[in-house]
Length: 179
Image (cartoon, rainbow, N blue to C red; front, side):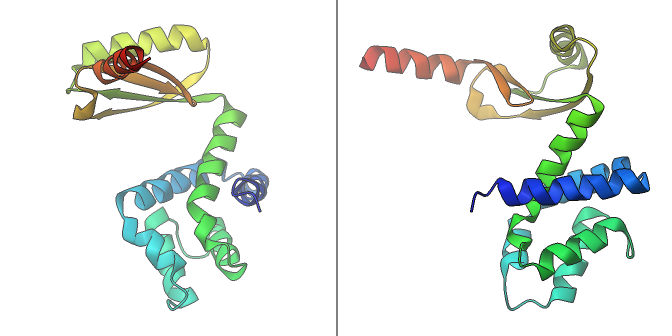
């Protein structure tokens, strides 16, 4: 079965419940934290996929990872996912929820990756250019440093990438020389 189909169906169902309860923003925050937890702690994925770890232990770990409270909609969602043996898709479900939420509320996800730490003025300049291109969309920005870029930056807006890095230019030059 398609890895995107299962997460999207569960995420749509969670979003529908969230809208009915008026908790979509709270759940959005918890899903962002859950994705960050999966990204920061690779052992979390191993624990969730381990069949020898009890359901209640997995639930506690995932509640902590998401920042959700006991008795919440997210807790019920996590329990359902575990009971249906879909825990391996949980990160993808959270990512799909984030995408659905952003589309519903007109939020663009903007990630700026630079080779070195930039000042606020430089980041503001880049964000101004992105803001002009997006029109009236709200932006949710993240900035990180990746020394592998050598120089320059990349901007990722909802999956569309502007790559103005030295690494990319060297890669293009290499391909041109090889052909």
